[in-house]
Structures are given as structure tokens and as C-alpha cells.
Amino acid sequence: MKLAIVGTGYVGLVSGACFAEFGYQTVCIDRDISRIESLNSGKCPFYEPGMDNLLSKHLNTTKLLSFSTSLSYSIINADIIFITVGTPSRRLDDDADLSYVWSVAEEIGKSIEKYSIIVTKSTVPVGTSKEIKKIIGNIVSKDLFDVVSNPEFLREGSAIDDFMRPDRVVVGTENEKSEKIMKELYRPLYLRETPVFNTSIETAEIIKYASNSFLATKIGFINEVADLCEAVGANVQDVSKAMGIDQRIGAKFLNAGPGYGGSCFPKDVKAFSSTAKKFKVDLSIINAVHKSNQKRVEKVAYKIIQHVKSKSVLSFLGLSFKPNTDDIRESSSIKLANYLQEKGYIINCFDPVAMENAKKEFINFNYFNNAQEACNKVDAIIIGTEWNEFRALNFSEIAKIVREKKIFDLRNIYDESELQKLGFEYYGTGK
Ligand code: NAD
Image 1 (cartoon, rainbow, N blue to C red):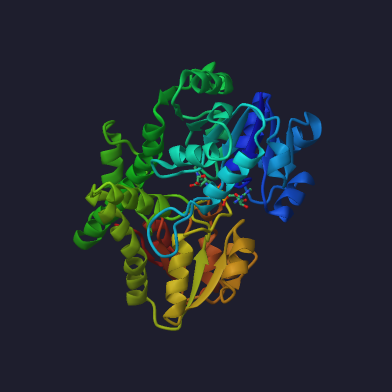
Image 2 (tube, rainbow, N blue to C red):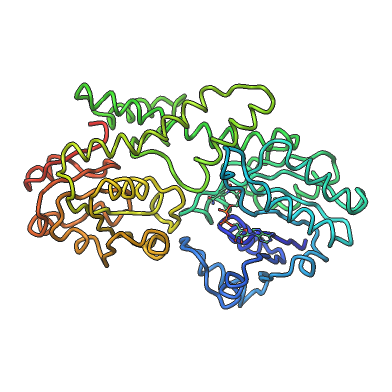
């Protein structure tokens, strides 16, 4: 089977490399020339554990993976064409911006010459795949293609493993022919007993938004419980643990913190609610989750402002929206640092891999080469992202170089008694 993947970002590149690992000849396409040049020279444009090896293996050794900027040339022989372009929030409202998807659909329509399946892997509102069908169908005969929805659930930071060993694969189709071909595509996973869930296109589109919105709800929920714990002197970590043991609830996504961020949850929660509104359905729970998360940064900032003098120097450890990625899109740590900078605080920072991305956008932060340097002469340390390397910082040494011994452990990765022994004032989340 020959595959073409349009949009070589996190999802496109990981999918492409993993499909090559399954043994499929795969071409990844992107309109960003420098990205394709970098990939053709074996350099991954973002940080993702394991990606460099997989890229090198399939670009240089098996030669199953290739990269191109030409959609029309690359899709001619493809049996399956994936759309994996971004679907960010629109500037003026909460809708998903589908302009990249529409333009790819049109380009595909102008270029296909033999029967292909067009698969939407980007996260798109219900109805989008059918709209793609209309766009392409206006250009070529409907016999020349089928549309399928196959939303992606990989997580940045563990994307390869998630793709190779997913909890489930969701495939929305509208006829047996495309269902059969998709089943064949995912045979390597089927053989590993991965549940492959076949459903309608609309259901598949909704599954993705419902899943992300549900996870965001868990985070929003525990964050508000954390506020109550702080108010009454309870411990949210114990609450989460005891709740999570209940198998009906589950322990994941019950860690209180500075609010959810990243390239998916914020935009997907908004788009889910906004799509529902168009069908006159009020997703009031999801609306509340969004509002609660929006207020989160200000709430956390207020706590810091109460305990740290104005114009102080703050050391932010961690800038990426979560560990093991250099993605800073909608990062809560960065939002908080920005907010505090606007209030007159000076921001020192360090992140193991996200500094280059941050430097491009946030030129007024002071960047340091390691956590210890970023803590020199500061008035408070803020742990914004729970990178493993921040879990064992040498606080006996750090205690000697800070101006004030204050730590805001937004991710609850430290035992407060250990830091208090070293003379630190410790502020966790919800405890
Ligand atoms: P991304 O921004 O990292 O990559 C998108 C790529 O598409 C970019 O490289 C861009 O240059 C390219 N592109 C845009 N228009 C193009 C065109 N006309 N032709 C060719 N290339 C074009 O996005 P991403 O994070 O990979 O997300 C892609 C989709 O997958 C989104 O809908 C997202 O919600 C969804 N998703 C993302 C994740 C994740 O963890 N990042 C996980 C699951 C699903």
C-alpha cells in the first residue's frame, strides 16, 4: 500500500514514520520548504523522543519514507491520502479554523488520477469529512475516491509509542470498500489485538472531541477541587489518589496544576462547544470547563503575587506545555510568566528543550543554560512543567544562591517537608 500524508507536523511526521515502520511506502508532504529540507537531511524539526532514529532508519536505510513539497506529484500513486494539517482556533471566535483543510481538499481534488481514500486525521468538527467529500466531488468523479475519518490520539512526548501501541484506533467510513482498505492498513495493529473501532464518519469525528473534552474536564475538575483543598487545609494529591483508585474514575488526568494547555485541549474544547451551538445544543459542562481553565492562570498568579514582592525576579523552570516536548503552544507556564511580566516581575527561565521555541516569541524573558543558573539571585522559583530533571534538583546548592527561599511547585513534584528543612517557603497546588 502506498501512502501520502499532507501536513508534516507532529501528527503527520509521527504517522508517516510509524506507517513506514509498518512497512508502507510513505511520502510526507508539507508546504513549508525549510521543514521539508530539514527532514530530507534527516533532521526532525521538533523534539519528540525516538523520532530521530525512526527518521534515519526509514529515510536512509529502508527508504520507505520520503518528503516532498509537491502535493500534486506526491499523491498520484497513493492508495490512501491522509490530511494532517493544523486546525487551530479561529482568531475571532471559538470555531476551528478549517482553511488549511479546505485548501488541501481542493488541491487533492485537482490532483488525484486513480481511486484513493482521503482520510481526515486532523481533529475536525463533525461534518467536515462530508464537506471534504463535496469539495473534491465538485472537481472529480465521486467514483475516484472515498472519504474516511480516522482521528489521531497520540500524545506529544510519547507519540511513537502511542501510535504503535494505541488504546484503540477509530475509523469512520461510509462504505464497505473503504472500511476493508482501512482494516488492511491497520492490520499490523489488529494483529497485536488493538481494538479497531469501526463506526460512521460523524461518530468518529465526535469521538475525538468528546475524548479530549472529557480529559480536559477531569483536569478542570481536579483544579477546582485543589482550590477547595487549599481553602480548608486538605491535600488534593491524596484526594486524587483515593479517587483514582476507584476504577470507575481512573487516576489519569487527575493532577492539579496551572491549567491545561498545549496545541489540542484548549482549541478542541472551544471548537466542540461551538460546533454543538450550531446544532442548537448547549454543551454547558464543556463551556464551564473552558471558562474555569481560562481563569486558572490569573488565580495562580494571584497566589504568587500575594507572597512575592512586586518587581521581584522569578525563576520559571519549564516552559513547554508538558514534559518531553518542545511544544509551547498555549503553555500554562508561559501564560503565567507573561502575565507576571506584565505585572512588573522579571522572568528568568530554563527548559530542557523548549528554549529555542520560546526565545523566538518571548524575547523579554531571561534565558539560562540550566535550572541552577536560572535560580541565581531570584526571589522565587516556579516549577511550571514537571520535567523529570526538575524532580531531583540540588536544593541544598540552590538554597545558597537564591535571594529568597520561596518555591511555587505548580505541579506538586516535591515533598514540602524536604524543602522546608532547607528553609524554603513551599507553596504547592491544592495542599
Ligand atoms: P502542526 O501545526 O504541528 O503541523 C501542521 C503542518 O501542516 C505544518 O507543518 C504546516 O506547514 C502543514 N500545512 C498546513 N497547510 C498545508 C498545506 N496546504 N499543504 C501542506 N502542508 C500544510 O499540527 P499538529 O500538531 O501535527 O496537528 C495536526 C492535526 O492533528 C490538528 O488537527 C490537531 O488537532 C491534531 N492532533 C494533534 C495532536 C498533537 O499532539 N499535536 C494529537 C492528535 C491530533
